[in-house]
Amino acid sequence: MQAELRKLPGVDKMFQSDEVAALAKIHGRQLVLEAIRSELDVARQQITVGQPAPSSTSLLQAIAARLSADVRPSLQPVINATGVIIHTNLGRALLSQRAQTAMQQVASAYSNLEYDLEVGVRGSRYVHAASLLCRLTGAEAAVVVNNNAGAVVLALTALAKDRQVIISRGQLVEIGGGFRIPDIMAQSGARLVEVGTTNRTYVRDYEQAIDSEHTGLVLAVHHSNYQITGFTTQPALAELVELARRYHLPLMEDLGSGTLLDTTPFGLAHEPTIQESLAAGADIVTASGDKLLGGPQAGLILGRADLLAKLKQHPLIRALRVDKTTLAALQATLLAYLENRALVEIPVWRMISADVRQLARRSQKWRAALRQNSTMAHLSLHVVDSASTVGGGSLPGQTLPTKALAISVPAVDSLAEKLRHAVPPVVARIEDGRLLFDPRTVLPEQDNVLITILKRVLVDNQSSSI
Ligand SMILES: *Cc1c(COP(=O)(O)O)cnc(C)c1O
Image (cartoon, rainbow, N blue to C red; front, side, top):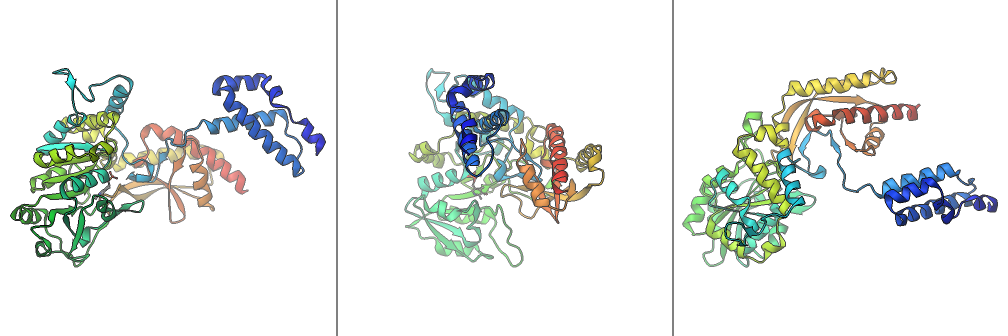
């Protein structure tokens, strides 16, 4: 053991080698030093359990591998083959080219973020996407904050702190990640008054709960991620608007996914649009920027100018402040809607409107590419009918028909795991013991990378299972 330990080179000695010097040039001396120390520790550990000292080549390889792992960012691109378009765990909406360019432009140069170029004095960041939002939705005013949960808290805090907010029991939702709307709302200091039952709430339930002295707001929350079916009643938004007006209370609707486009032409159920909610008379509408809108993470607040003025003056808005790159991406995304190019430019809508024959062709192409490899000739590869989903807490239970590549192997979980460890990682869907790859959420420009990774992982999987 002592003899083996003595074979290990010293740190100084290692730095004299050309290979280590080259690594130090790329990664800096300190990081290389840490990698060498860690790998020497590993080698010593192995020697104490009876292993021989590593060769200098394998020691160098281990150091290089550790360095590339050290500098690989934890947050990295992945290939989403799940068919879930707005996949919250995989980063929700992808940005359009126009939005990416806009972000880069304001990131790399100074901008008029809070500077009024007309007068040459301090301006407000809140003007930037606001006029576009108003133009597209018919809202009187708009303000953008960090995300929709923040938008809801800000609106309730500014408009109903220490007052009652009336909400239907059927709308007390959990939005994923364990976050519950009622808990978020409670942070505002508003007191939630729950009315009706899970499946049935009537206008009179709201009316009975209104207390002219203590009620501050009537709240509707869109059923983003679940359905209540069967014996159900919820008043139409217009009925709640009428009630709220009668009692001089503001009516707020949290739409969640906040679409500007109608979802029905794509065979999906109707998701209420921001325009419809405002047209029905909602005083305040809140929505996410990175769900069906297809833009950056943001919370959009639209509605009455007098109410939004209160929000803009509230100190909490500073804590929910939206970044300049977000505003740039949001503006660019909204411009695509203004020019009626959303279906062409915005990835979420490109994926929703993708032609299933086109998707089938891509799955066939993936299959053919894998088949070319003789070791995969006997592998079970099929293009199958499957269903993509919109996700992101919108359109629950709604699916889009798709054609996915299905791979059947004995150990499907282990194959899925290997794919998750690829660079870039590939996330697929396991269904009926098969691994499904849905082209709807794989960008066409990722096709070749996906095929390369699949080939490598499948070959590796076969040799390891023999
Ligand atoms: C998604 C969602 C939210 C939260 O929006 P974020 O932008 O994720 O903060 C709030 N309310 C509803 C109804 C939602 O669907």
